[in-house]
Image (tube, rainbow, N blue to C red; front, side):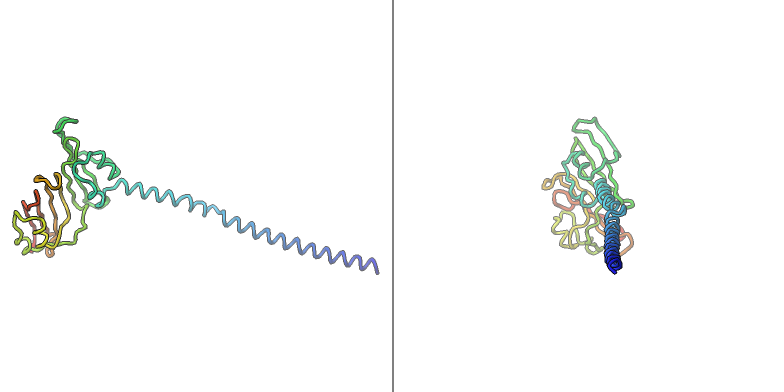
Length: 217
C-alpha cells in the first residue's frame, strides 16, 4: 500500500512537472514568433528605403526649375547664384564678347518637367540682365478682353492698367533694376474668349510702352 501511494505521488508530481514544461515551451514559442515578426526583413527594408526615397525626391526637386525659383531669381545675380537657386547647370544658348569683360554676354536656358516650359537668363558682365519664361509661371488668374485691351493706352502706370484689367498677369520677361527708368517688365494675359487668345503688356520705368494682342474678342 505504501509503495502504491508512493508511486501515485510520484506519478502526480511527474505529471505536474510535465505540464509546467509544456506551458513553458509554449510561452517560449510565442516569444520567438513575436520577435520574428518585430524584426522581420520587410520591416527593416521599409525603414531603410523610406529616407532614401525622400532624398531622391528632394534631389530631383532641387535640380528642377519651378515657378517659385523663377520668382526668387532677381536681376543682378551672378550665374552661380542663379544655379544655386535652381540646383542645376543651365544650357548655354548664346555667348558673345570676351569672358571676364563687361561686354561678355551669355544666355542660358533651364527647362522644367512640363512640356514646352523653359526660362532664359541673360548675363552681361557676369550679372543677370534679363530673365524670361514660357510656361513656367502660370499663377495669375487675371484674364483680359478686347474692350479692356482697347481701353489701355501707352503711358499709363501699372496701377492704372491693373485697375482696368483686374490685376497683374504672369511675368514673362524682366530686365533692369526695379525703380529705375530702364527697369522693363512684360506681363502676359490669357483672353477670356477665343482659343489661344492672349495679350502682352510691356512697362518701362513704370509706364506702359507697348501692348499687343492675339485673338481677343
